Image 1 (cartoon, helix red, strand yellow):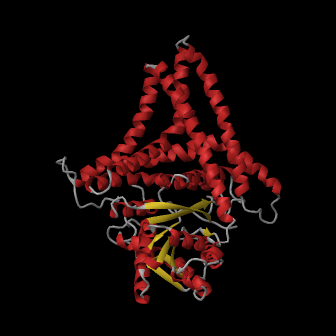
Image 2 (cartoon, one colour):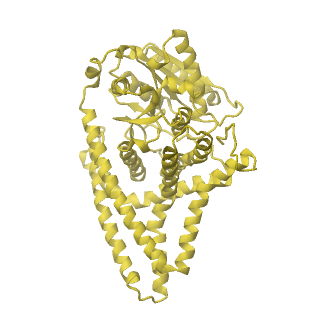
Image 3 (cartoon, rainbow, N blue to C red):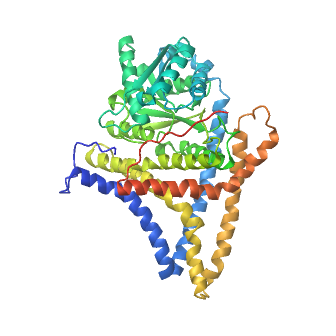
Length: 505
């Protein structure tokens, strides 16, 4: 899965496939080693483990504090960006009229109402619609449903945008994993043919890939164009907006709202540290860069983050992600059945966590590319490995395994001060952590869209109280699916692309 290389590690006398498999095993092995060590050492040397857990909890408390600070900074930048009339500001820039936006919108089995909502969002853009080249990317394996979507959307939108193109990705092409990456790679190449016919210079095209439930902010393309033209290295950076899961938030259950808001807040904090930022979900990039790397990789699950790494390797580390502080709104996980909603939420988180497949790709390509500075290699590898490791282990170690050595020591009638004081200390850390949850609750209500007809402002109360579910969601929709994803990669039980079920009331 995602194994595409031309060189091997010179130090090893193993096949390329075996070498790559070893790299795939490492993240899951580290996770399960941490769990095993926590359990075994709790019985063997519980006092040592208690000391480690205390330091571990203090570390994560400090980390939570500065994460909250980053979140507040990102929130302030969002408010500032939302207050700007970007189209008016853009008109003061020379040459803005020459910039085209290629928008790729892949769809597979989604209801027509979901696709239409995304296209209506594009149609409400303040940027001249004549400069939008919109590609609706359908799948041949979607059969009659895809044909129906094609006919409905062509009838409704073909005359609205500068160009409206519908592509159909063939089924079962060799070397592909059926999913979004393969679909948009096919659509991107068809769009390139159109751009070449129209003789539009690649540097005058910015491509935006949207999940089908994405609704762009009306000023997004004006803001993106202004940022693109003002960037000193516009062709060597991707552009990442804020993901807000708001389309159906008033109809979704508390569990999935909490997961969605947690994802939004985490990605908002990452925008304040762009040196750590990868592209995620809906984002934009120079068309020139996309052509240079040969479009999206077609044999992986997490094409949204991989495309950044493709560019990073192609340009020898001279590629970044520039944050944009206007949102693109998407769906929370919500279908009529609560149980199906919970299962779908788990599968979505597992698919996102499968971004761990980027680790072996990074190690392999960093090892054979001598032009990328060593410091950059180490930083990106550490951020990737530490990120997926913490995603899988931190909540379980804090909330579950953290109490095991204390119980073991108490059962052995230990009189050590550290054993007697640990429960109180951990409880106080939990109380202090509640301050962060209160802040998150307040911010999440400020970010909410206006309630639909029939919903009163009193609905804000459960929207705030839902954050009491955060510890549960960290484990059920954080640690467990992340461990699941890394275990599958470790065992070679590769994950295929799973499309999150969408619905509209």
